[in-house]
Image 1 (tube, one colour):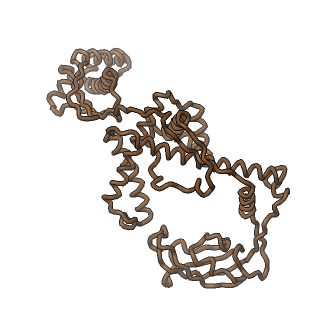
Image 2 (tube, rainbow, N blue to C red; image 1 turned 30 degrees about the horizontal axis):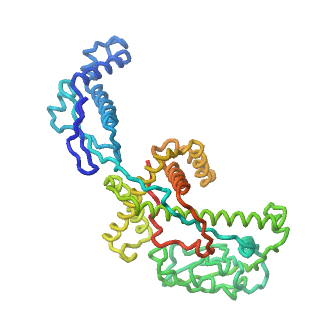
Image 3 (cartoon, helix red, strand yellow; image 1 turned 90 degrees about the vertical axis):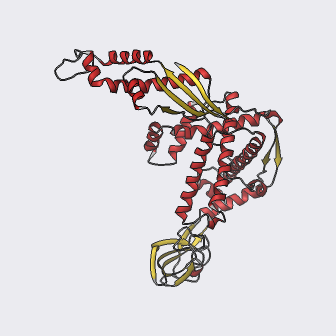
Length: 457
């Protein structure tokens, strides 16, 4: 096998691979010998078909198998011998000369093809120990726990129907309604035995207010206007009329904050409940703080590294982002103009996000490679288990999907790998805990979208 570099331009490479006719003939003979005892042709016993007859009947199909196998193995060998690191699967091209192709199929000419690909760039990593990172820390005080318990109480309010009760804020009503616009009913505008709590914002603005003061048996007609940004474009911004029948009005009954409340959640005491609430809130704050720390770290890595990006990887990432963006717009019935952008400016914006993701993906992959970061089978199994739990009753389908779908496991592996690399970087950097308020912690920085890296190899 002869390999010649025919062109190089930045990260782009083109190689010409030539496999001699002699080797091609040897491989064909070997393949013929492998199948001769399995072929059965009418008029001959199995294993007794003359080689010449086998060549006549199956020669071209067997040669096609040999060529496919030879191209696959020789292309991998060429990359390995040259220590090339292609960014994506190389494109293979053959001669379009029909006479030359026939000569190859007949085993009378060398097999020649070209491989075109982009290589991964060489990345000069910064010294991670020079990074100074702040981790925001919020103290969970008793006032925060008091508020959390009060919110828990609100989420566990029950309702008691009261005859003759006049509906007010916080009451639950059971209603039937038929909505119409300009006298014409619209799709999705009808409901029966619908339960609605006044003040929770479960319906469009104005509807719940129209129920205040109603009693069981009342049939108010409520006018309410759909928001301008409503997801159904045909209804957005339009006023609707709802013929409503109130079937019952129930008052809220809040549980008392005492030992019985805690026991209702399977805990021994109110103090145990408060401890559980504290641990949950501390965990939520820690997760949020880590996400902000990670975002800050990725920003720094992105700014600190500059190198040529493989166009194929950027285009692939952009195409995925663009498909999601356009699909979202289409489903919402909106356009780029509605978002205050032109398609051209949107493409430029998402192209920059794609470049950032690819750059960070390559940087994190290089850091992980040097640090010998690995994702264990146990970590993958745990991730698969968590994913399956998201679909109760369909766990078997989830397992089968990841077992049978090529590349699906990478969907689980990539975020685990990225987080482990981030943890490694943080362990090398200078980390300082900085106390902040809850409001400061929960404040998202501008431009947070697109911060994540593209999946690393």
